[in-house]
Length: 156
Image (cartoon, rainbow, N blue to C red; front, side, top):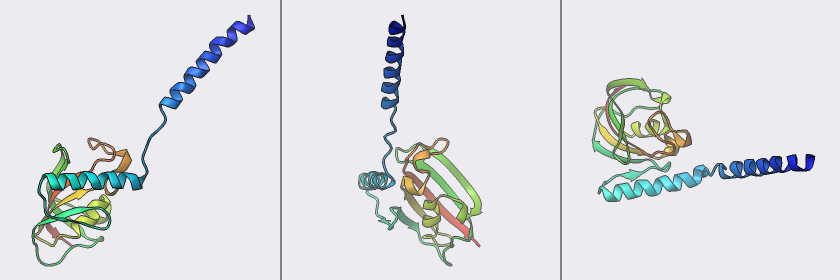
């Protein structure tokens, strides 16, 4: 009798091991994700005939309107109009006349907005590592490359 009760436990144990193995997390490293993001951005840029440039961090930016009177720094409070979307065109956020501490937003904005001058505008295509990374956020999927049109209205 004990011999027969051992078989169901063995089968259940093997099934549990199989399920655990199938659920193994196949996350890529941040370096590999950066390469994936770079390829996605390059493909998007080529398909849309965009004329901008990459920064060393992988941010792609286009100055669409030159501003004047200097650029903010990381300690600045900035006021912007913006619209954000995923690379597939799905909008996820926008704002008009929004003010915030530049140090309190995603790295891609910290870097990209400092490239703009007061009264200027630009497009920022932000790799996931400079945005919400593998965790995503609300309607933004994990490892999403983000696209923003930003007008820098003011800073102090």
